[in-house]
Each structure stands twice: as structure tokens, then as C-alpha cells.
Length: 130
Image 1 (spheres, helix red, strand yellow):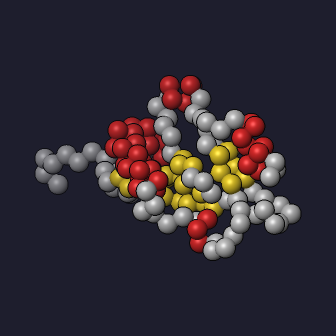
Image 2 (spheres, helix red, strand yellow; image 1 turned 180 degrees about the horizontal axis):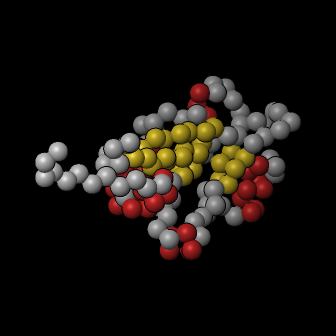
């Protein structure tokens, strides 16, 4: 009330993620460093004794694709982290007040994960060429 001005803009998730990239991206980079150092639980590690599907008839393998030039030109940035057998999705969010930001990290386990730098020969050798 009175002469106070409180401007809260509503925006969709993609717009918020792009607009606040300068805050989200460094937090994702920090998580990646910690993930590589083993400081975050691995979804694949919870399957103790799992051999990566080598003895099963079906294996689930994924390859992360690189961002396209038009995506980076639109302000998008990398929100996936590829481990050896995990993919982490970094979900950049805004609280309902549209002022406070937070990240959710969703970890998914697979039999094999390949980075965006992996070539077709490496993917073949690591998935079916065993």
C-alpha cells in the first residue's frame, strides 16, 4: 500500500532460464566439478554389482548431443551433465515469487553414457561392440 512499488513479472520457464543464465550456469558448472569429484550420488552406483548390462539381452545407452549454434544464439546453455553411466538434468527454476532461483538436479542411470564429443565408433564399441 502507499507509494511502494513491487514489480513482479511472470515469465515462462524458458524465458526465466535464459534471462538468469548468468546465475544458473555457474551453479551448474560448480555441480559438474563436484559430480566429477564424486561428491554427488550416482544413480548407476546405487545398482551395486551391476555390470552395465553386459550379461542382459538389452542395454540402455545414451549419447548427449551438443547444443546447436542456433540454440546458443538464442541464449540457451548446457543443462545436461554426462557421467560414465549417469545423465544429470539441471532443472533451472524460479520460486513463485519470481525473484528467488533454485536448481533441481535429476540423476538418471543407464548402462552406458557417451558425451557429445563421442564419435560413432566409440559409441558402437561401448554399446554393442563388446
